[in-house]
Length: 361
Ligand SMILES: [Zn+2]
Image (cartoon, rainbow, N blue to C red; front, side, top):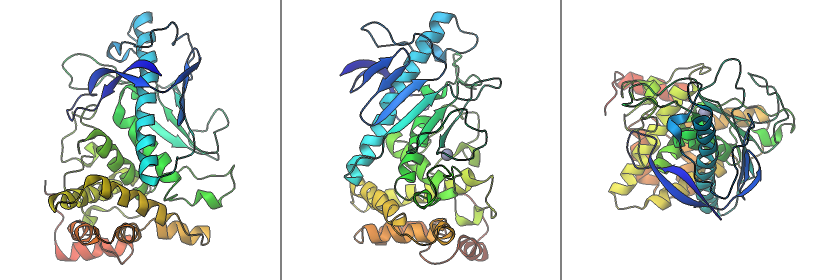
């Protein structure tokens, strides 16, 4: 066990409360930590982790304008912060699934130049855009950028280093959880070196919902997207009632916005279960059970991919996973235009024929 610094979720609109936490990790190099569930390394190298004291200063994100020592502190903090949150997400999923997920590799500072990158992505081996400069671990990797800009609208300047932002870490680890449960692209049946890293709406929405659970707030990107209005889909706030009426068909390029419909429907379903006296742990177990159920069949890849792409199929798997919670979940999902039968386009047509799309908060 080691003592490190990390931001702890506080339900607010910042990165969280800076705290010291115990981490079950081993330092294996100047910029690499190994934990039972996850390995985290900084691709940019440098002597980040040295000495007995591994409690580092976030240094307002460091960044290109920071002094060398502040940048070192910020990167080292990014390593321990990302490790803490990745482990927390993986442990909570493993507890709900009652089985560990395959080991995850997190690379910080990937794809760093010449254009700096302010986000993250989840990659499997196979063709990708941008191409990966090194072989990708067959069980999946999270890549976090070096950061591109300062957080807009914050009182004091903070360089938005993705490894400092628990929401970005949780979202990307959420894709790893999806890959090894629902497996929306049916990668289990594809060749190990030709996996599909693209994300469908349900994958994005599930990752956002898991992020909200772990952060304890529906305003998951409230820190680095505070400048985007809450009603704007790009804010990706879960407690607006996004319905299937907002679905953009031919979804390429809209997976995040379409995913917000699923994320906000899950948020409503959970709220309804809690309001009726149900327990959040049980709801979470239902979700993970539903994801595993969705990925549990072995039809032809094309057909399976189409099936797993459907909101109605995901809902049906939830209902199967916990019949006791099913009535509350079904009712809440219906408010979002999600029913247990029909293609995504049919669900969209159905709600559009009965209402004009208005987002209610
Ligand atoms: Zn994503």
